[in-house]
Length: 422
Image (cartoon, rainbow, N blue to C red; front, side, top):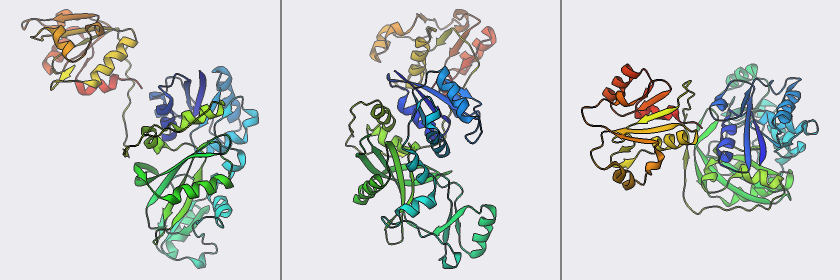
């Protein structure tokens, strides 16, 4: 097993890395961030308070974690961190998982990227001097990611306004067509093993939140050109946008994982695992399922409840079983509790043979440390120990009675997600 550090781990990139590796028996994940972020709700091993990437002691502090946690690989989860870490690879006591310095430097600058590729593949027209502008125009940071800090300008006054706020903005031709990301993978021999496009159908805060595969022979052609011009190892992607005539124009290249690469993970292509196995010298190949898939992303909720409990008391009808189906959320929580060594008690007024009912739904009675079937006139609170216990039931009346008599936390079904970890 190899130890893998992700920094900063709370970005969408860091969260996708966690999803890619959390079930792997080959890697143990460690997350770190400079600020308190969502990573602490996801990473079991989490460190906060590292210096920002441009701080003088950033590399020194990263190395402290590397040495303390015996880190083998560091996966950067932000474009600025990619460049900083690879530029300091010789000082870092772990393998930084990205491409070479020259590639990372070129990709970090849109201006340098366009300069390198303008004679090879279509790139946006850069208006400099500005008297050549054809409106509308598009303003974009030279060093940036996604669509953050970008603007569409309709007049020279608009351009002046945005440039006064940020003089580093590039003034580019406006591309009105669809936008695509092409996810790629290059092995340590420099061979391009994967290059497939997906449409950025809906974008929120610079992130593609709805995406589906898109077919275009040009995607692979451009990937081959980029792969032969720059030196990659592992996962990378590029983005293109259509001109009015449908011509694809290069927008940016990034030598890292993209959060929405999760789409192809659903097809069976785990870019992060491939990346790590490739660096470990293992033989790798691509296995892609032949199916149709689409990804749609939204804010998700993770909870940290400060409640230490030893026992779980739970109802059966309309709780573990709802509408003649197993409540998978509740079952997940029960197995989580079992894994943690909690005592699980089934407390129900079920009128049929409970063991037969459990068998009907393929639930083993061994999941429970105790099964208690009550008469109608009995109160559930009489069978619950006070102290480090919790109670889960669909009935408000039952929860109210237990809460008042036993003074323990009680949960309805909608609140069970707050008990789930990871």
